[in-house]
Each structure stands twice: as structure tokens, then as C-alpha cells.
Length: 308
Image (spheres, rainbow, N blue to C red):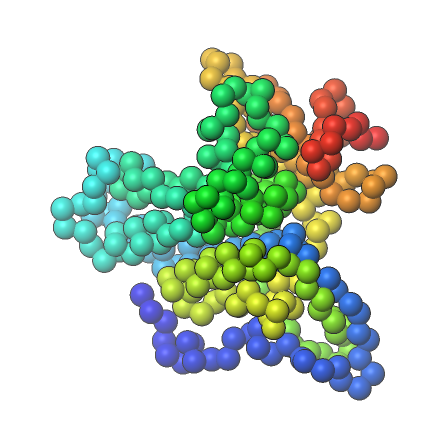
């Protein structure tokens, strides 16, 4: 479903950022690292995707559910890995989106595919839960991402070998803010952007951007130096406490494996705390109660430590 030409031809918001300071502007330097770049891309993607999920894609899902004569979600409707005999435009659209490489490698089992990203593949390749550690999983996910040329968001974080970014981009239920628009108000600060992003990471991210824009139109900015300001919106401190369950043991009463983003106050940097628990921890729960239990071994950038 294409957008009106007037929308497609409209100058995108990332082109409106002022290139030179206005008289009296307060200029501050802002560094875009690999992590800031990835978090910024994640926010831009989620802002854009949220609109499509609530609009076009939800309408398509409802039409497909009606066609199938079921109120169950399309993703759980079995079709022996094959599309309906006479696929409708709505099901074709959903299949095109959910099969996209921006979500990882698609696996066709139901009407719509599930996706497996490098971190999930890294977990599955482990021979035992004892191999589920931040350093091992991060290193293996990076190798998988490069070997498979994965350009999903999790794949990009894996390429950067950044456990903090992996935790942030693998998490669920994250708060999505409205898209920033750079109006260039004269009473605001003007950021002088200095980018420190690996060229290989940018090249992979550009494939993510191109793939997304081919599905939905020109909604994500190019992953180039010229548009570094568009990815500088992310604030690292906002991801502290983000928690994601990555896996579980197969017992009847399983233990659940989690990663959570923590602040190492002594080193003044973010790190990842890994822990097992008999129940599932969410970001909301971790931010509320995560510091109550200090019995687990935590890892800051792969180095075991005890936080105080």
C-alpha cells in the first residue's frame, strides 16, 4: 500500500536540521558512538513501525482473520508452512513485512513466519545453560551476524559486540516516544555532531534502512555522516534497568535466564547484569525491585563484579 505522492515528495524531517549556527546559538558537542547510533536507529524504527502496526498492518491482520473465519492471531494459524490457496492482498502484505530481513532470518512454520536473530541463534547453539554467559553469547552472536550478513537491529548490535546494545534491542515492552523534529528554534541548543561509528556497522545499518524504506516509504534517514544528527536522539541513561528474558531451562519448574542493563557507578559506564530466576522479570519489575537481590554474579562488559 503506497502513500500519497504529496507525502512521498515532502522533504523529510532529517533534512531540516540547521547546518550552521544562528547568531547567538549555544553550540554543544555531541558524540554519536556505535551504541548511540544503534539506540537512535532503534527509536526511529519503532516510532515509524508503531504507526504502521496500529494502522495499515492491523487492518490487514483483521481482514485476514475474517477471511480465515477465526479471531485468533494470524501468526498462530497453522498452514503447514504454506500460504492460503488463494492469498488475498492483505495476507501478501503481511507476509512481505514479516518475512523481511529487518527482523532476522524468517522461519516459515505458520501462516506468517517467525524470525530468528543472531542472539537467539547464539542461545540455541549452546550445549548447556552453563554456556549462557554474557561474554560467550555476545561473541557467538557477533560471529553469527557476520557469517549470515544479518542486518536486523539485534544483528547490528551483535556486529558491534555490545552486550548493552544487545540487551536494549532484544528487550520488549519499551517505551516509544514521539519522533523528534528538528525545528531549529533560536532559543534552543544546537548540537555539533561528531560521529564515531564503525563504517562496516553503518553499511549494514544502511541495508536495514533501505529494506524498511522499500516496505513503507522514505521514513528512516540514511545511515551516513551527513545525517548523524538524526541518530543522536538516544540518551543512554534512559535504558538503565531495561531487562529481557532470553531463555529458560526445560524442567517442569524452569529457571529463567535474564540480562539487565545496569550502571556501574564506580566506572561511570553501563554494563549488563545476567541472572537466573525462578520467575520472569520484566523491565518494570527490575527497575522497581532489581537491586533487592544481590546474590547473583553480575557482569560489567563481561567482567564479573559485585555492584554496590
